[in-house]
Image (cartoon, rainbow, N blue to C red; front, side, top):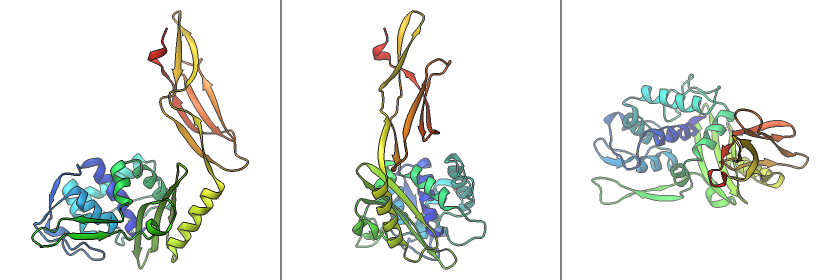
Length: 287
């Protein structure tokens, strides 16, 4: 997956560091092969600036600098990346470095990478960074800033494009994770070892938006039912909205269980459960 690895790197950093933390560049982060923002030992940048270097310019030096800041070593940070993947439910991934340079023990699947990207896109800071086309960051000791331009060409030529990361090595080929949002629905596409990666991703995005629409089947805090508890009428609601993409011929339905000790609501797509949530009491409507 080459530098699409950095999606997991960024998510792990965001889970364990503050954007305003100041990082002193470790000599071990200088001169890393491949893409670089040309960090110098001893200079200072914030975590957010290094994340821009990581996600816009694919800086392998940014990746190592962040890993050392968060975990103290690349090996320890890789373990944190694997924890991030496990927490997202991934079962076909193993990370041994933060940048994606080739290692036989460093791998993922398109599915896992898509799942991890969806998790990352729930983070506001991640979304802001990967959707940025150009940014200036510090360049300590120099008379000019670093100007970083995003390598993601879809941001300029695909309707609604808003992320996320390119990647390339000779062994991995061209890899790309792209995302776009139209009419309130965000779609993530993963292509691995794909020469025309931007064109293929744009076609897949267009196909998804042409054939699917986002349907809200469970509104947030809508009353799902009532039951009598100790002589009082108690109202139950779902505390979160649930929406799901559907195409022609697919049907979303709900099932509500108020009889068990734990009231629940389920959303089903053609009879298969795609969402389940415990209902909560609506305190404003307690009688």
